[in-house]
Image (cartoon, rainbow, N blue to C red):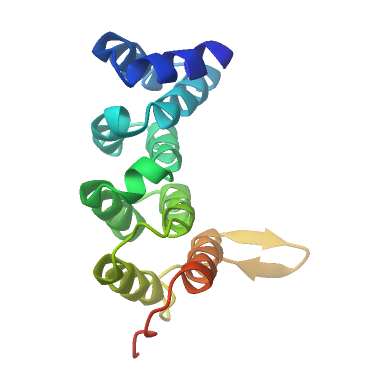
Amino acid sequence: VEASYLLGEMATSDRAAVEVLRRALHDDAESTRRASMYGLRTAGAAAIEVLRDALQAERPSTRRLATAGLGSVAAALDSTAVESLLVAMEEDPDDLVRSNAAYSLGQVVRFDALDPAPVERIAQRLTARLGPDVELDNAFNASLTRSAVRQSVAYALVQLGANHLFTAPQR
């Protein structure tokens, strides 16, 4: 993992380091993919495209890591990264990808560098995920059913409300 962080620091000015991390993100070993995500997240803006592209990977665990990697300051400043997270939250067939995307949006909205227009759009699209039958229960614990996606959406909305003044979307 330490090597991935070091590669991430190098990747801010060295495209070869980004490529090493990109290949590692698609490795067969989960630990290698996870370490790569940490490095790519550290690389910031230099890795946004790699993480966005990984949202199209066949392997759901790679897409989950890509969404986690996009929950960063660099992603908050990149409208294409934010839109990619919104699309992943709304459309990915894997519920844990959708949950990670919602959680990462919660991380992104913590940064006050976001303009009000994207904040409003993010709020509307997060709120839409709370509608009836949008996200089915997928977690069953102690006789309590819940949706991991709705739970992550709630986290994102709390972060949004705590860090930005906005008008709540009308339902």
